[in-house]
Length: 182
Image (cartoon, rainbow, N blue to C red; front, top):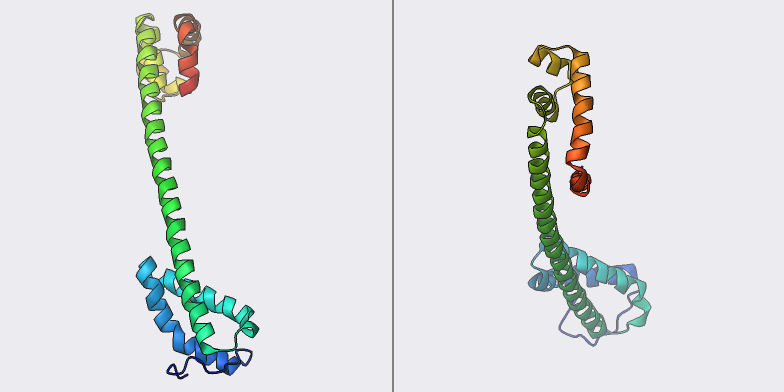
């Protein structure tokens, strides 16, 4: 399609004319969009969207200069909208990451404090009961604890039961902390 005379009549309802317009302007519009968004794929999507819109309203245009103006204006506006959208997404992601860092720090602090309070309470238990509870905190099952300490599994269960009773008393004022963590 000749670009020298932009004021020529044009009938975009004819598919071959629309194809000529597409072939003429597609690559220049992609380059134009890419100056804004600096991403070839996004630029191509923007241009494609603009041609779809042009196809939908193709009967509104009678001159090539109208089509050209519509396409460049549409591409510019869509590219600017894309930049604005990306800016909003980036700001949201940044705020989200900051909140995650704060939350992680807060959770870590609570975890450390809970562990400290719990180990201090376990240290107040009788030695064998404390040993059972430490091994249980490491994830050992009753049978493995019994084998490790050379006692029966029933003894381990009894020691744990007694430990829980005493820990409830020792940790009464720290329940809120432990429940936040657990």
